[in-house]
Figure 1 (tube, rainbow, N blue to C red):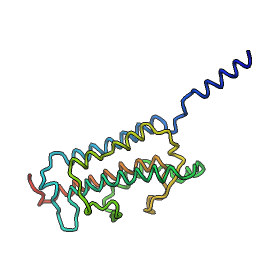
Figure 2 (figure 1 turned 180 degrees about the vertical axis):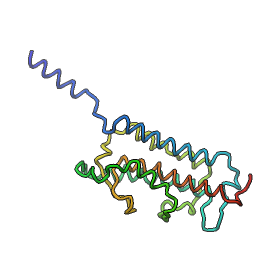
Figure 3 (figure 1 turned 90 degrees about the vertical axis):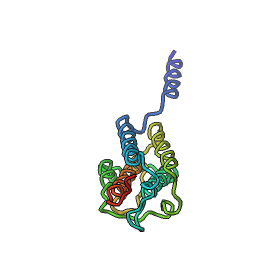
Figure 4 (figure 1 turned 135 degrees about the vertical axis):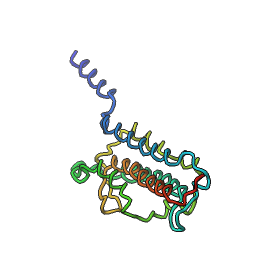
Length: 201
């Protein structure tokens, strides 16, 4: 009888689903942030004519097409950094204090357009520009599905961002980085649209 009970308990433990590594609140927050930044981008680019899409306020400034291209390229690049870089690092739960409190600050910090940074070569949109349809098609679908379903321990994998002001981020924060980056360059799109020479149609 005792053996039967022990066996039953063991089988139950083996059959039980793995404990989620993110809370429901964390998942919901990340999905809401990703969907919010996507809506912001889609609203900013909806109904633009080819002339508006390609308008540049100055030769050294990006057009809306280039901003959109950069956003799409960056999402794929950062998502690859998460799956092929961040998640390959050792689990370091003892370092959680280093990343504590960065969730909210990160998205806000990235929207500060007074801070300028040069896009790295793989993310330079002047090399190849996507059509509006291609930019939208590439947008966030893979990242959203990942954050909804992953069982990876995102909070205990740490990876340094190359910008010192951002510093060390955990895997979850690298996902939020995608959203903050999208918001940053959607604000840049709104700056282009506010230019007095922006085409009326």
